[in-house]
Length: 196
Image (cartoon, rainbow, N blue to C red; front, side, top):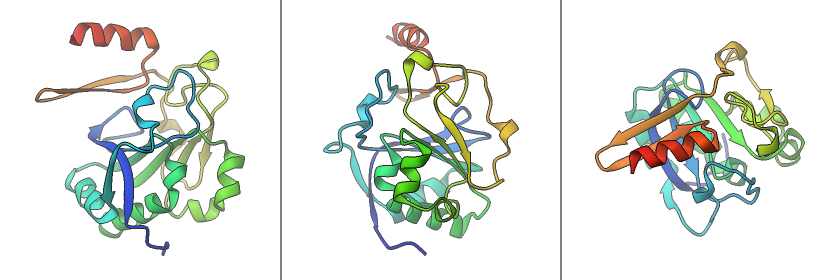
């Protein structure tokens, strides 16, 4: 049981994605990031004074309303709100224990360990893609730059399910268009040009 936090600052939720981890998953985008990697795909999530404050109860309820097998925690920087995110995962898994959880963090494994014991973190998070994005080391796949490390905290997500192919997903919902996944700068520019 984690200490109650009750609120998280989020940028948004992608209800269903097949490119932010294995299977069909909900993606929660935390708001606020002090890492600020050059070339970051989610720069709009950096500012900790914007975003939406949501209770962990309302977020869990929304996440559980989607019929997905997994949850991806992205950013912003999830480690800046890790205790609230652990509370959220605990609430989701209380109802749907089979939910696997993948987290993208700009923090290195060593930095994560300085904040929380990995065994404790493994009670909530199954896999962490750890380390800052380095555009000079950009590569294909869910691990977007070669300096990043895949940290397996449980065996719930087998390594063969973390694809090395660069996948982009365009989600249209009414007037809103969301581009997610791991596009190159050129792919993103071309997509935005085509959508406008």
